[in-house]
Amino acid sequence: MSRQIYITENDYHKLNDLLNEALIEGVQGDVSFKILEAELKNAKIVDSKMLPRNVVTMNSRILIDLNGYDEEVNLVYPHEADLIENKISVLSPIGTAILGYSEGDTINCDVPSGTMNIKIKSILYQPEAAGDYDL
Image 1 (cartoon, rainbow, N blue to C red):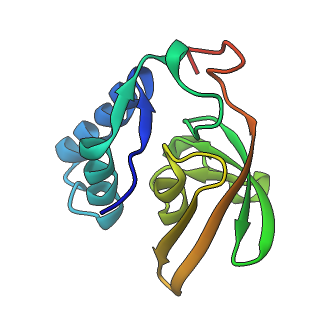
Image 2 (image 1 turned 135 degrees about the vertical axis):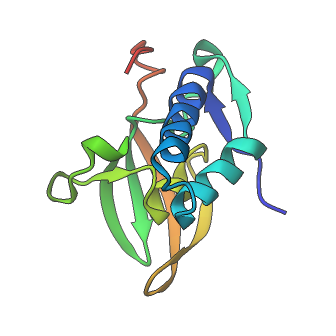
Image 3 (image 1 turned 90 degrees about the vertical axis):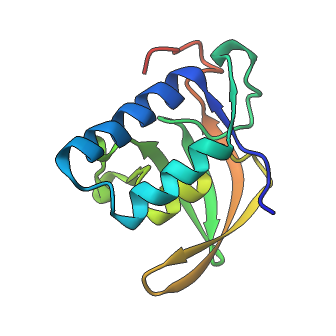
């Protein structure tokens, strides 16, 4: 059984809109959409102002350990993704894996080349903690 993840109401609605757009465009069969859909169904939805500061939300900047290497990444919506700037899409395997998890959590993530071990070392910026509720 997987651990409980937390998603803000705002993120939940935006991500559901993303899934609905995929349904309309006919790409909802993509594995990444199915994984995100499953994560949303199992997530605990919380008010942005009540969310703990150590939870990964959309537009968070996070220090993660990827198979022993530290990476600073930003979790973003697909249209904002830019690997050069370390902006990873929520639809990427790593993006979906870290959404809603907390500092200190370790997640095993299936990627095309195998399995990655991801540890969330630190939340460097969380919009909700900074009072940026509308990102």
